[in-house]
Length: 144
Image: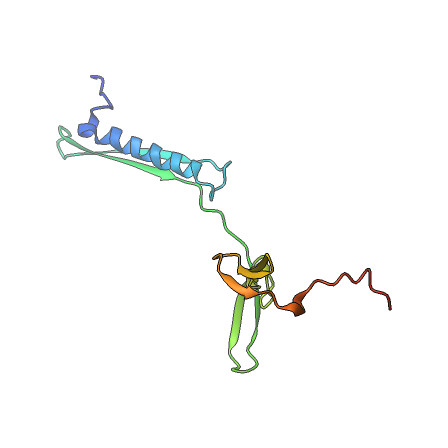
């Protein structure tokens, strides 16, 4: 039997399918959402279908990949019923308890004092005199 060059087999489709399968496997290995230690596989099937006289054979080439599935994720949800509307609600609990204020929820006061004048520290706009009722009092020095 004559040697068959797999590089040119099926007009190069065999090599193209193998290269495409290898690319799929390498992308799956590099995906951080898959198990790093899972085994990936490439199965190459070459099908031969002869005619009745057995003098002509059609061949089919197919490359199949077995990849690692995406990792599952777990989350927590807080569920309850809205007292006002009676509707059931579900809220994902992340780093913060639902309804709890975070530091980002508190609006910062962008007003500072420069030379006795109130200044918007974000824009640099002079707002006027600093109100006298906002003086800092050192309670450690006060006597009862």
